[in-house]
Amino acid sequence: MEKKPVHVLIVEDDNFLAEIYQKKFTLEGYKVQSVNNGEKALLEAKKKRPDIILLDILLPKLDGFAVLEKLKADAATRSIPVILLTNLGQRDDVEKGLQVGAVDYLIKAHFKPSEVIDKVRKVLGEK
Image: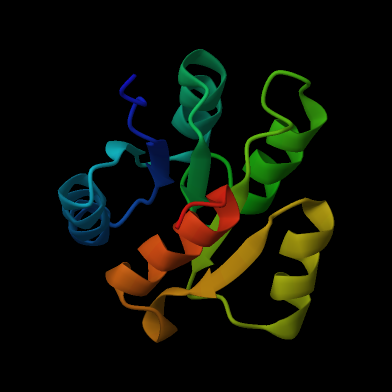
């Protein structure tokens, strides 16, 4: 039986970056969807139930922390792992993100897209 592709939701308001991640994940066989603001992220997470969410923090309408809090407060989306993918590298931001419920925190400038994919695989327990 063929297993269905892993569904990744990318929440990123920088279209160029979102496209790079989308291409990279698609090439690796993932099903990818990308949205560009916090409100859409919540709607899509509830509707589509992705396997994992890559979430930027600085977003229009609703920032990543607010999105994360809402995802974790909702029984329907609580169990979806969220990796924060951002340029905010302050220790407080990292700690806040992990306290709110992110499984990991990646600084965009420090990680190539291929490394982000490796992280996703690790979180999802893929080889």
